[in-house]
Image (cartoon, rainbow, N blue to C red):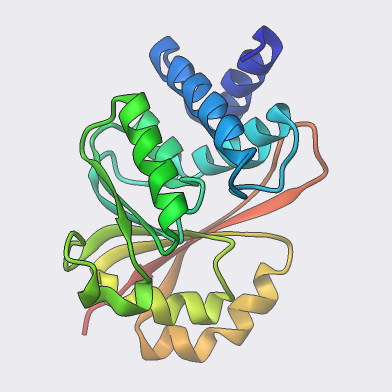
Length: 221
């Protein structure tokens, strides 16, 4: 990682309320190089510049951290390139993380990155969220479920609900049209007892890209 890219990561994380240690920055460097190398033969991301990967994948993922508990179980559904699960685990080692991904080649990438990063308490699991009982390593419930670029909010809520107990959080990374998605999801939210816990608007460094972190809490029966 170039010195200026390293500074971008540190500053971008700081603007999200996250202070990175030198060890964590070094782990992001390993992650960046691994992702860059694997992406040449496997379509993990359409982003073609390392600096943009830092901004649009790493920093974007870290925007959620100040709004999450300091520890707990976390399921990253449709993990793909390990986003946001791996960045969250790098910074918050206390999380027990499962990365759920349906494609075998991407699972190979995730397992390789977990090994190279030397992370404990994290596992890449192959399977689909809608086939919960066919993926034995998964916990019955999680404290946090993260989704990014998965599907519409309405479908996301339906898909993720069974993974959360009352009090659990569904963390969705969204763009500009989140208000429309919320309106389209009102009935589903009511039926499955989800309420909006937090809605955080933010802008990523060096871009005009406006983002929204939507956090839904699952209520009781």
